[in-house]
Amino acid sequence: MTYKVIQWTTGFVGREAVKGILAHPELELVGAYAWSPEKDGQDVGELCGIGRLGIQASNDIDGLLALGADCVCYTPNHPDIDVICRLLEGGINVVSSNLTNVRAAGKAARKRVEAAAQAGGVSLFGSGIFPGFANYIAANMATVSQNFRRVRFLESVDVSTYHAIRNYDNLGWGKTPDPKWEQASREVLGFYDECLDVMGAMLKVPISERRFTLEWAITPDDREYFGFEIKAGTIAGQKTTWQAFTAGQDDAVLELDVCWVAGKGLEPEWPIHHGYTMKVDGNPNVQTRVTFSPQVAERIEDFIDMSNTVTSMPLVSAIPTVCEAASGIRTYADLPLITGHYVPNI
Image 1: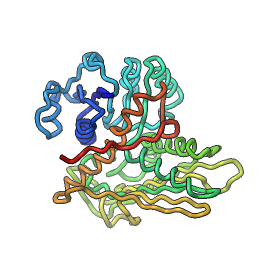
Image 2: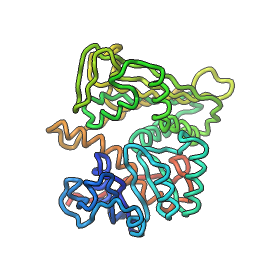
Image 3: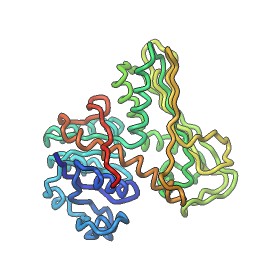
Image 4: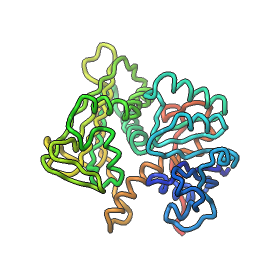
């Protein structure tokens, strides 16, 4: 069966999603949403740097809904609940790189999204590399451990090669530390907290309490990355931790640590592993480290493109499964196994 797909925005992640959709033998790209007026009417292939495809990007949502697509691959910088509900109510499944289960958006928003999916008879699925695929792998590791006590997960990345580093401005980077930036991280990164829900559901952990902590790293000197200035004495890194506890337990059962820095020489300077470290405490203890390297490593852009690929491909791979799923908000905890699809190298 072939599933018709609309790509929602053609930014860094969206471009890689388009490539994945075109290569997937069960998917057909039928349209794309143009976020900016400059992209409206342009060929999607040219926007993605892969040559003409004969498919125009459009900002006409009604026109895109009329294409009869089965799924939207939704990858803008920030989710718009109004748009997502409109797509779902229109009978189009949605896979999203910036949502998990919508709990962080509040009860009213989550209830609205669930109702929209039920009304349209479709489903919403959130993933990416993390949140998404990586924490799913961490939870699966507990399968081999008898009576596991804790699952810990660490993302550790230097984001100084990240073209969209300016996005960290809304977390206070480049500003002096202030409690409002802690609250901003709690709100903006709420979909990381939702990973605890998915892992808890997968592992049947009865979560009774959650805790959130944040520590900043300060730059002792002025620095600039891709036009984003970070002055001396301002935030240039952060270590964010989400924990889940069960009743009567002093130690967290699930723990997510996310460590981001912009270059070296920060205060404090945390060790950076450029990937994911996952540990299960149990019998036996289990540990693994997941890292990535580009297929071709000749330019810094090759590493940048790689990060966008590993964000987009968990979504692309999930589309056939999501299109066949029961209506509603769906996660890795209640979907069948999602795998990639082999494509012969001809």
